[in-house]
Image 1: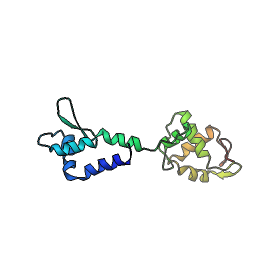
Image 2: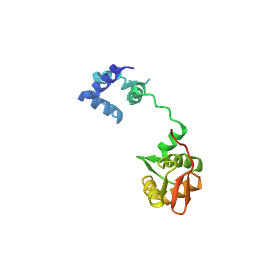
Image 3: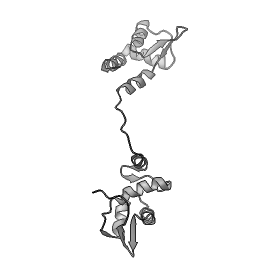
Image 4: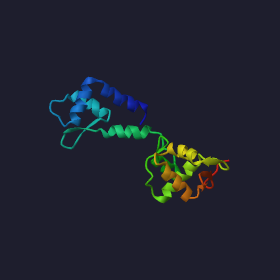
Length: 164
């Protein structure tokens, strides 16, 4: 399949007579259709005759064209798949996540805190609120998983991956 196949299909759907004929086939109304239009649709892969001579639409042609011209999907690591699942536009969709997946998300969130920097609790809350409204739960998870440490109302990053 090439670009010419796409142009042919789009050209058939651009013409009123073949578009109406295709729509009729999709809706199952096969009586009184123009043989000329049916043959045009068949030449573009949008219609076919069954063994009884009955015409039917072949909308799967669109799927085939899309697959033939689709970009190969990029390979994502397991961590990237988890992050894409639970972070939408940078916001965490839920805090109720299985521990293994929650750890991936927490490691990502811990990355906003610089190692060696001490943060007041209110600053931690502001940073975590950017990810989810239940910032207290996130703070607790980060401390429980030893990604942040706490003394009084002061927090610092104590675990997780550090990019150099």
